[in-house]
Image (cartoon, rainbow, N blue to C red):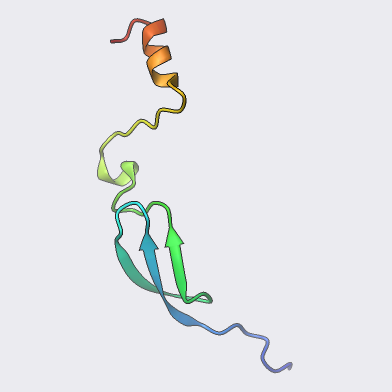
Length: 67
């Protein structure tokens, strides 16, 4: 068998950029940055956030008289 074929495993620090929560896991990288985690994701928190890009939500509300 070949020597040194397996990667090095680190105890990685994972940091969420959405809520700044950190936790540790095993990975081949020493530090991992994620955009959204389970403690700030709307599917798990139950809160609804609408990301409005270029006023699309407002335009739809005006078009269908939803306000």
